[in-house]
Image (tube, rainbow, N blue to C red; front, side):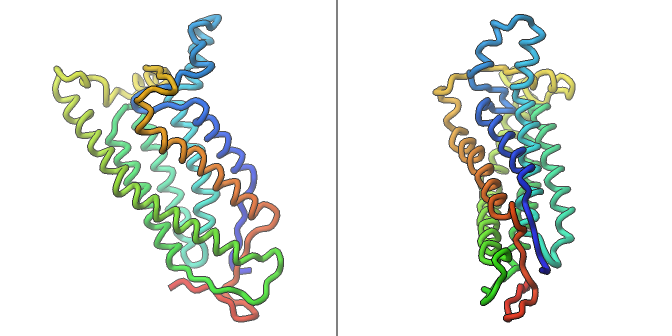
Length: 276
């Protein structure tokens, strides 16, 4: 075969564990909002302040962001990029991996500093990465094969590629239309305007010093019940995100787990892959 890829179960388990953590102990990272669930609601009953801090830090907004960074990085580098970037576009792989790593670092710093400008930059990086991803996948055209080995499943390969193309199109549109403008607006409102006026209730609450931001991010600054109205704007997005990515990863691993999916540039019966 000229092309082959395989998604192992190890990264899949890691991604599922990361998103299970995020779904059980939900929070809004920059605003330091945490859902009031066990064991957070039992912190006041902890045997010592030290143990209470360890539990709170382990379930804090900053820890949640770091866990999400691991899950997102593994999902994109182990599932999405190998799925779509093959052949003469293989040189894009290290560039895309670098973009993913950069986006995660920028996002983590944004959470620490409570600075929405970092999130505007992060989502601009995702926009550039998924645009490259979409363009590379769009160029690849596959034709059906009249004869294949049972383990060489081009129809499944095509399905994975088309799903990757659809996902990239959705993510490009979402980042360009929703995420980047939203974070830019929050940056102007809470960081630029809010920190310029000492009389503003937002003054001193954002663009925190780095070390203070770490300590601040390791605590839940506000606990909210599950039915609190403040969750409504983000609940649908969080639910879809935390459920769809692990399911996608499990599906890909189930397809490629036992035998790598392969394809051919030239096939004995005339099948071929063409990148225009």
